[in-house]
Structures are given as structure tokens and as C-alpha cells.
Length: 288
Image 1 (spheres, helix red, strand yellow):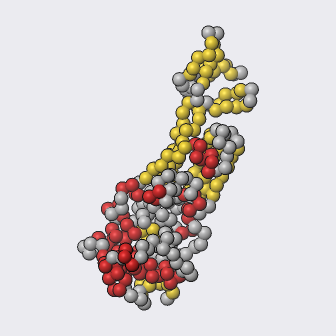
Image 2 (tube, rainbow, N blue to C red):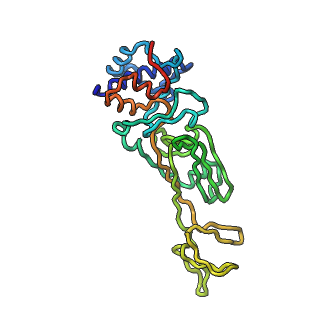
Image 3 (cartoon, helix red, strand yellow):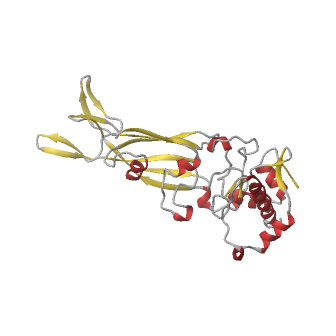
């Protein structure tokens, strides 16, 4: 194989096409991080020179060639994570990306505390969190909105992939301190509250709710779950409290267009820069 050089050429052409469509560029992740002349690499400079003038085009015009770090095995449809529809930014398989991308970018997980969730959703910090629901929007399961149900009411936050990712601060500054992508599933972590039953000898702490017998108007029943509601003078109270929510996901970035680790993997499989680009950008050609 070519050891990845064709991926550098693909990146050069992609960056050039992106620049041709952008009114403003920066040296931040909003465009592509650039560390200045001293950070340049002879291999990437050679790739730029060898592809001089080449652009990714559709109907003879340069297209907006978005790229990202890691797709997690499949890129996203642009309409599933952003608002504008482009027929060349469709979900495609990243067949070999797992051979080059770090494992923690392919499959990651972060646990977010209840207190953080309440704060991020603008709910009183003393409220109880009852439910956390992530609503898939994309064809692959990308999340488009999240609902939390609490003792202080129900709140839903929605938006594009960047809005969703910023709802969940991770503290991991290596990845800008928020969730790596909006392609994730959620697991709610619960614990039984400190529950006591009043007996003749005094209150007795319950280790579990499941299996306890409760007298109702219809007779005595046995609770089948630790999650139940108890009527108190102040209303219904849940027997379980949500401690945290664990988010398990894939990829890093918006996952639109070309995966840089994926391009590297395809290059190592012998693909040319043109083959890589026309794979990630559907219905396009590469020419001057």
C-alpha cells in the first residue's frame, strides 16, 4: 500500500475545496487548526503541491467538503445533524476506520452526574431526576433532542449536533470539554433511596423495594421492581433516585463528510485520493 500518502492528498484537495466555499477561514477547529509555518510537514506540503488546483466538484462547481476526525464506523447524513441539505453529504460506511483510529474514539463513554444534568437543563439543583430520554433523529441513531423528567417539571433540549454535544460537559479538555459526537445511547444509573418502614418497634430501613408486600384497596401485592411510587403527605415520591447517566457513543466531531482516520485507513488499503474523496462526498468528481 501507499502508507497513507494518498490520504494527505485527499486532505489537501478537501481543504482546498472547503476554502473555495468559505467566506472566512481561521486557524481554529472551526476551519482546520494551523500552527504556523514552523508546524508544517514536508509530506503534507508535497501533497498540496502535487494536487495543485484540484477540487471536489458537483455539476462543475466546488462543493463544501467538510471533514472530521473519526466517524465511529459510519458518517452521518448532513440533514440528520445540521440544517442544510446537500446531496453530496450522505451517510457512508467507514469500513476500515477501526484499523487506524484510536479505540477510545471508536467507542467512548462518559458518566454525567445528576447535578450536572439539572444545571445544564436549567432545573433547580434540589430537584429529583426521574427520567432521561435521548431521542434519536438520524438514520444511524444520532440524537436530535434530549428530555429530562424531574420533580420540578419536564424539560426538552434540541438542536444540531453541536448543541446536543455541549449539553454534556465531560471535563476532558483534550476533546474540548464536551461530548465527542451526538451518536450515542444512554443508560440511567439509579440507586434505592434511604427508605424506612414504620413498625411497632420503630422505623426499619429497607435494603430493597422489590419483593416487599404492600397492602392496597384490592388486597396485598408483592412489588416486582425497586422502582415504585409512594404516596406521602406532599405527593407521590419515587423509591429510586437517578445518580447519573452514562452516555456511550462513537466518533469524534460532526461526522459529516470525510473522516480523517477513515481516509488514512482507505489509503493504507490502496485507495487513491480521488477514490477516497468520491466515496465520502457522494455524486462528485475531482478535477481542476
